[in-house]
Image (cartoon, rainbow, N blue to C red; front, side):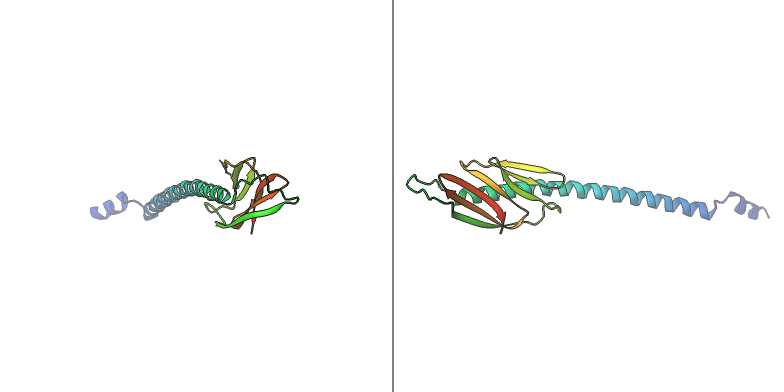
Length: 153
């Protein structure tokens, strides 16, 4: 009789032990999910920075390839397209939509929460915007003015 008493009186309820196991499993799962989301956000920002630098470099080098100083003997009365390059930019960077534009001798890449700029060292005016994909970079010349324009192709 004594053995029966110790079995019932000293044991822990199975509901309490299962509840503790479920609680620790949920806490462990929340820790894993939070850590993975943090790693994903850090990786996304890293990819965003690297890709923005690559796009700046590509657009800058494309602009430099098509632009050539014009001699004074060429002076068209109207603006003419002197050359262009079509580049295939990514449609998204870091899983975010973006817009690329020229502003005051700089290339600006804007996402919903970030902005990147890089300087272009050409003696010309810049204009236009693109949202990625097939993009046309055009060099226009007329009336003594140079303009490099970016637009969706």
